[in-house]
Image (cartoon, rainbow, N blue to C red):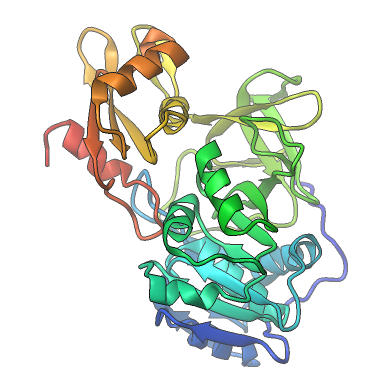
Length: 387
């Protein structure tokens, strides 16, 4: 498998002189700073995180949104390769305050912390329980790392953030209303949505010219191929997304995923999508979540996106359960909306009939994983009547 590796790269995950942790949430991040200052040893950190300075490896865990979390193993250079890229893209460096939402069990939180410390910045750890007092620590931050779930909470509770210049977010899609709320909160900030996974790290990054519905073009030094089996597909055709570059993981230390494959085109983690003629990537959904409803292939992610676009819906999750006549039926949960019939009518205007859920439940709060993603396993059990 070919890779593209910037040269030279630090081979050890080290904290730069002047790096600081401001842990307003008690996440245990100071232990990572200590590990990154050490010359050797193996340091086990809260949330399954391990920094091994001798073997030059890092262990983190996946979010577990569709199954049990998996412990993944990667080299130090698979992260340090992107530190220099983000220093340039987001102006992270000595003395810069970088606010980071989420607990250390989430790989994005751990990555952002290690990146900030390696570049000599001040890591402001917000944790995963937002409050107005805690969010006052955002004052003076120039960069914010947060998933869309945490951004919704921050937009609702944080004071104005005139110093914020870059918001880096992944693990979900922001709606137009959420972008508008962020713009009002931090008018000078540019929002950078990325697509990636614990196994691949960054895959794409959006820019102001990214078309609606796209997750952006390839992140620097990443090569994306859309393929059907071993055959690359032309622009516009949906297939498996293959990723190659210097940021890929080495393997699973525990657990595994039958959807993850390695080959001449890099790694595929089971995501489907297509590239347009200008290199912008559009996601269709995970192959493992695709179901058949009345002989139509349906990606629940498409339904979730349409739900989030409806006025009054703040978040949504869709699962599928077996149906004797139609193959599967879709069950949806939405946050924020008050009338399921209004939501269903809006979906019928936006989607083909097979994509409209058989049932729509309105809830104040979706069940969530520690990283903030919807807990699809719990929702599937609820849909089957097991809970």
